[in-house]
Length: 81
Image (cartoon, rainbow, N blue to C red; front, top):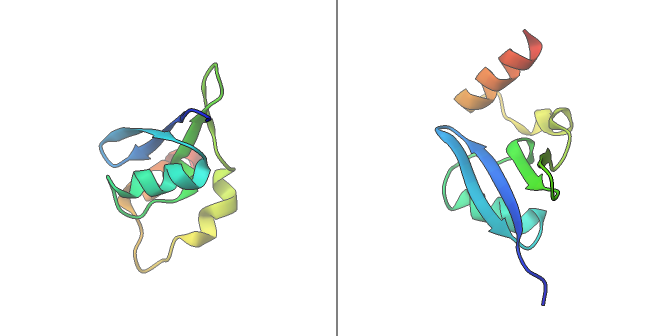
């Protein structure tokens, strides 16, 4: 039986620490603590540091313009500035 992998999700008020079996399980667990969960803020522990699960730009189109997440807007603004 395999153990859990450490993940963290950047939430509105800080990181949500997660133990999960895979990336999908980590997203499900993050949804238990916050809304509007996307993979762009999900990171997996690789044994030395947390690394992004996927490239943030690959999922930028998932966000609907009608319901922007405030943190996403702030985070993208910092990346672009």
